[in-house]
Structure formats: C-alpha cells, structure tokens
Amino acid sequence: MARVELRVRELQVLKMVCSEKKNREMATKLKLNLRTVEKVKTALYRKTKTRSVLGLFKWAYKQGLVKL
Image: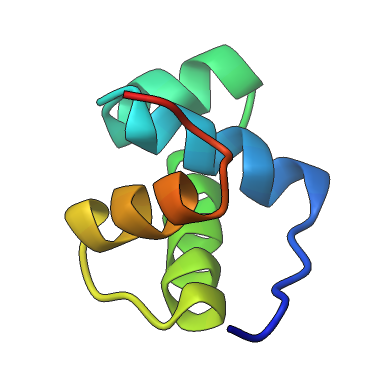
C-alpha cells in the first residue's frame, strides 16, 4: 500500500468525517468556509483513492488513524 501524505487540515477533516460530522459542522468547528471543507474532502477522496465517506473511514481505519 502506497504511503499517503496528508496535510494537517486534511487529517482534521478526515477525523471529523469519521466521527459522522456534517460539512457545515466541520466548517463551523474549524472556522472554514463550507466550500473549503468540500474541497478538502475532494482532495481526501483523490489521495486515498476512495469514493465515499465509508471508503474514507475504511482507509483511515486500515491506516490506524481511527478506532471503532
């Protein structure tokens, strides 16, 4: 499995996605524009080669970034 380098912001958003936060909640908590959160999620999908929130969660779990 190829190593994927995530930026700090991407890691923050990934952990919030895995905690079932909505885009608007993430934007408020991280003091970002909603569109910025959407762009970060798009970058995460591209970098992790996933297509859904479930795919992101599975990837993060396999990497040891989140626990059940």
